[in-house]
Length: 589
Image 1 (cartoon, rainbow, N blue to C red):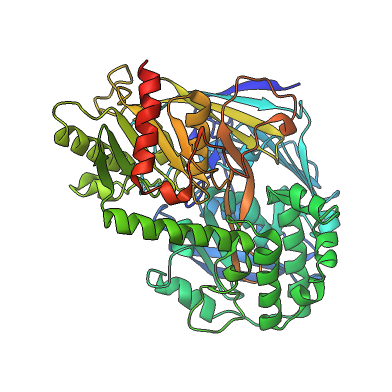
Image 2 (cartoon, rainbow, N blue to C red; image 1 turned 90 degrees about the horizontal axis):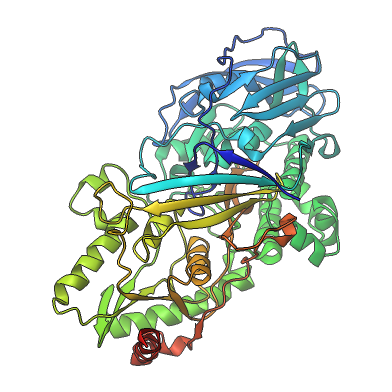
């Protein structure tokens, strides 16, 4: 059975491109975080001195500083002092949300982060934690206001794990957790994976310097990639076999614990873990190779041929690749799923352009169509301009509905088709705000966390008229809403389709959506290769059932079936409007 705990506050980061929802308690720990750097170096580590840290993230103001670096005497991996890094990245981490238990023994250090237990055990090479929220005590973004016009009414936390703590077993991955005199030392790659990547920030070390970046910088296209990020890749140190082994072990830990589709893909290949999986697909030797071209090719085979998952992709080359372009643009053609999506996308784009010539708002009889190709949150500065509707989905819908009302003074329009057939996803908060245009009722969604064996039900309302009130005057529920979906309706758009179908605030028409219920997890391998994978955070609409395990929770990774089927060839023909008009007449009766 599940245990319930009500959360006092929340924090939205993202669902796909820049997103993951994590919960953050507003309750502060009883003791204030204090950190003095302990100069006693563990015997397992060699002191390499202080290295320069530079932050290029626009989302957080983090002072450039020096971070002490250590090298493991056996496996030669680079280590950092956890407490020191958390303190020096206080522009990212909210130090009011973490405290250290002073009653630790020499091999165990325990923290209270977000009111969640977090225990590092150097003797057993384990990290124990109450929930994934223990790793997510970060500040709000300084660039975007995700909560504008969004009111969260409640967040209820349900766990299937009882009072048992979850455990990361690092020993079986050859990763050493070092504890000395109340301090915890971790490989820089593991520290980043635990504390930074879930919050869409990554801390990297290139063998010379540290660099911190957010999703927007590390996932920028070639034209927008910061020059400082490119330079960081061009001044890196040489690889060796031990580094490749550490990288391989990191990948095993990453996939076994952070890949939301791991259980599914391991079952497909009849294996139990990453090590067996890589042996089965015969990529171990190539991944361990010190030849950059050889292991780069292995990454392509792994991510695109075998994972074949639209949320999982290679972002950059490794540090060892000395080409001018650090962005990895190879390999996507080897993914069958990507090929299928691309083929349908080209078909629909061609039909749309021929029918509407780029116009994102159309009218036919008693029906209007709004094209919405992504869910985005504009920056605070962008949303203070007249062009805010170009940058933010809330303002885009506000603008387009005002255009409908302007063009229809006699109220002849009865139906609105929200076309998300080419919507590849985006921000969770933007999705929530978009739902508010369809109904003024309270809505909800479930976030299932496969790491913690738990889920959160979030209930919310949207202020669509911007009057600061959340009431019956919000939304445009006087219209019959239809949502057009297809295989390219992915990630956040897939969640949108699931919510409207299950709440019946709109009818889904078209083809089955493209899935992608697990949010993007952006991280970086020790060799510098930035990668995305599907996370263990799965999003669906709420259901009127009481699940008894994670396996009982809704599963929409493979898409949401439409209420009304429609061939792709009719997505941009009059047939769509005729079907909608006929169906709406049944509703009116």
